[in-house]
Image (tube, rainbow, N blue to C red; front, side):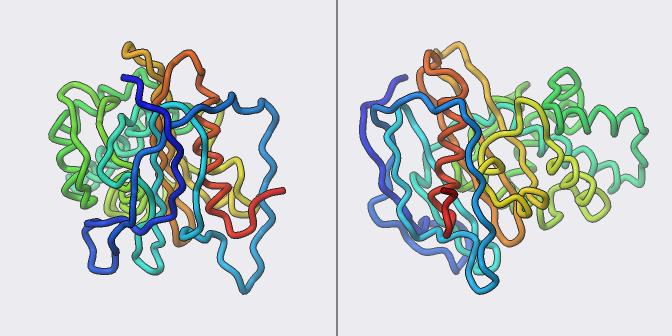
Length: 285
């Protein structure tokens, strides 16, 4: 469904986010407006912040003119505060959910005292690094299918996420739930103590068409320590669905978008980049 055109200016602390330190929003709303195709040129990389300054300033406005829906969330892990827009609106994850599929399978293997075979680890690695889909459903079924998504909701304290039987790709998440999932992966709840380091390393080495979004505009030294998993798919509903998740040192970012499929994938990947760029304390030049 195409949404009416509008413009969003937001730098808000989200309401009802599940922890005492999270505050209420002011005039949060979804974003959509007429926009232009992103340039094909590589985004410039931000300079590293000074030793005395933060990398991000999540209270500053985030403003874009784009068609369709978009929403963002930034989790300040050190302050335990969640910032962003449209706190309750969801979009589907596409391949981003593969990070949970891998985490859930690995944690449960460890809980059962099992050591995964090297062949399984190779398949999971390709699922994360290359977003290979061939074996994803196999591991999702072994995790319990829809039961696995329900376990993600409970384990990670998600509030808007809804799963679909026989599909990890159609999982509906709000941007703030994406930021919470990223936190859950980073702090070890998702994959467990044995496999969290392995999973984060795989996410730091995402390559090919799945390496886009926040990672493209971060300072070069920060890129090396940032774990990501993105989703992108043009569905039969005539919409491109884009999902971006990033886990850094003391922060996470979630961005969700969908828009007319005629605009192409890069139109949505630019949204993930632009949100991150505007949240940076020292934006790239």
